[in-house]
Length: 285
Image (cartoon, rainbow, N blue to C red; front, side):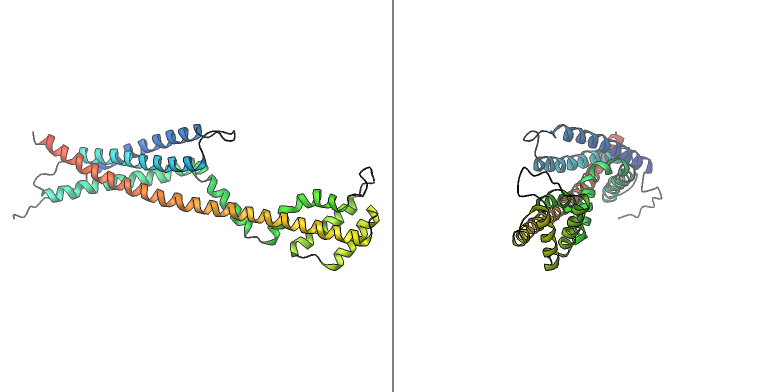
């Protein structure tokens, strides 16, 4: 087989950049259309509109469609517009066309990542940031539990402890008494256990205010503290579940995005070879 000394450039950068620009532009347009279709499927009313599962699946399908369509167009343009190589073996032409499509896809992907991050991060990353914030809050341990039940302790649990026996009684507890009871309650909630000394002290305060006996007051303190503990545990479990759901959603989205990008790279390379072959067929006439 004769050796061919062809010193012409193996990459037609003009064709590559043209394909990359077209791919990036079409990708942007399709993403905007996808956001519009997705938002139109969401309804603020319950039991109306598409469900979360349907929206998630449709988003994945649309991202894959966007990658395949935009990358295929960019690869085809890069292959069709490239310079015709004379006296180059068919295998080398096939490789160069494939490389043109892959390079055009790479440039378009990097450009989209740079230019669209600031615009799309608020839409795509809102749920992920929320999940990260929830997960960070869960890792704070007991302090997060205390913060979760602070408002409830100041309002409901404190009122329940100081509630008078008679519904017609109007002798409301003073602010200093309520603040003291709330502080003691929250301190014991953070430790996870109600001390005997605090139980007896709160029982005396409650007994003096409500007229309950010491035994009745202690029983009320233990009951209300148990309810507060259950509320704190339920709140923590809810936060953990939300963080776990956000983590799984982020992992699934990343995996499907990886698959969509691979599909884009494949179709860009495939369409570049098709465009190159059509370019050579037109030039042969």
